Length: 164
Image 1 (cartoon, rainbow, N blue to C red):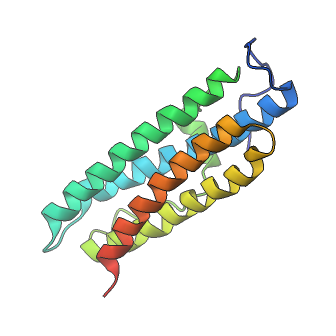
Image 2 (tube, rainbow, N blue to C red):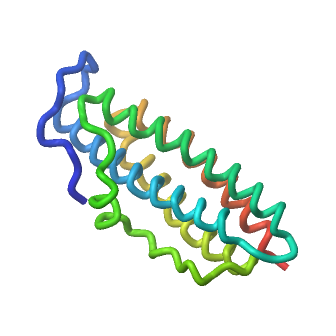
């Protein structure tokens, strides 16, 4: 995944430049997926229909708000390490690994199932990034742990609504 790591800005953080570059790459990859997940969550929020509309609509708005916080924290860590955070939306769309959201899916339980599938991809990615970063940068690993914990809790909320 192409990221903005070729030219590091000077920082006083005493990590090796190659470690900073790799952490920035992981962080920006996660920003891409968190941003796409936020967009898909908002699409679900706006378009969900069914007998539980109001509760799902409100829950999805809360979950989207959690993603906004995570995106900001992860992007700011990339800049703290001397990188450039994020990508223009056109590049983001080309780089996400999440499936495209199907706007024809509006039935409440089907929306939640599709969203849970995507949420799991991003949550599992966070855990993978914890493992990779903890050997070289405990602060970035800690951030991924924090993000992972919230993603897992929100995934649990989604799954609790779709199990029968």
